[in-house]
Image 1 (cartoon, rainbow, N blue to C red):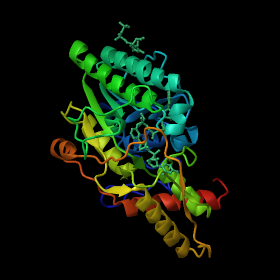
Image 2: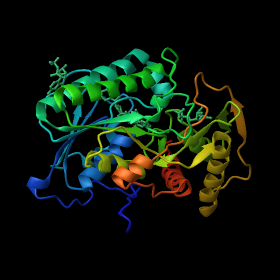
Image 3: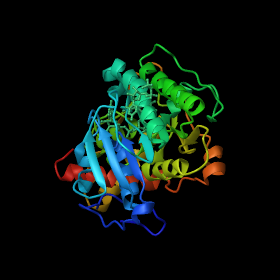
Length: 350
Ligand code: NAD
Ligand code: UDP
Ligand code: UDP
């Protein structure tokens, strides 16, 4: 459903949503690595709905064919099983490079592979961009700031990252991926864009990937205890996936070549966030009469090593260069996500 303000609800997306194709000369050939993942699949939807030709490269490590299955068979869509640590040849106009596991349990599962994906995968996609003269956008992360001593984080901050801790494979992988990206810009004139994505949530997030938003919603829907790690005083700011997709497409099509933060500046302690999720789940359950008599509890578990204590995006650059702002409040976004997971649970798929 495309809402009047341009935002899209995907919960009711059927096979082959109606796409008004652009005239062939205006269709861009767009490659999306990691396009079967959570963020990638939403980007696929938006670019397909805009009428472009989209090819997804994915090895399905954390993504799934089902996230894009509604496009399979569409003449503008192609899904390719490919691991980006290996070279890949195609012709294209734009590359959105997202391939990389993003949740701590997934990227720590095989940390060497995570570093290889970030380094070799980015090298190959930059080589492809160099050969085809395609514009290249990399999905970097707020994790390049590590456990930040500057708050909120601006793009000028160099970060505070432990190079050998359990998060290093991801944080340092993304840092070297940014270094490579600017190396190709400086040495080979590759046209690059770097988006530093802050915590993002929404439908299609893998419910079992261990990130906080999916964990809390699934726990609350199942009537289980909500697991807060540490004392719950650490902070994060959460943006809804549609706002991020807006920012990525705006950045790709802008002249801004510096790293650009895209994220929410609405900061919560994790303890407060657990309360908010519980309240919203109860509201949605009340609407259809499924609210259980007993409220679920918040329990405390050990804090993971090197867990950043605070994080909030300074998005002045995105606002000035792209005219980007968030359109979804956390409450609106969480309600949409709770309804999505609840439908899955009711179908027996959660
Ligand atoms: P995700 O795990 O859902 O998606 C990652 C996708 O990449 C999956 O489909 C996975 O199968 C694929 N992939 C992984 N390794 C690959 C490889 N070697 N070759 C080909 N495909 C591979 O995660 P996501 O949340 O959608 O994140 C997408 C990108 O955005 C990642 O690069 C991540 O670092 C970045 N990011 C995400 C967030 C967030 O909050 N979700 C925040 C900052 C940055
Ligand atoms: N590459 C790729 N697809 C292409 C072009 C290059 O996967 O269309 C890979 C190539 O195999 C190499 C990497 O990208 O591993 C970097 O390419 P580049 O041309 O910059 O370096 P070189 O091949 O000269 O080492
Ligand atoms: N967290 C939590 N309970 C959970 C999962 C995560 O309290 O069930 C905490 C985690 O320790 C961190 C924050 O929530 O402080 C965000 O975690 P997530 O893994 O979602 O993202 P990241 O740490 O990469 O920002």
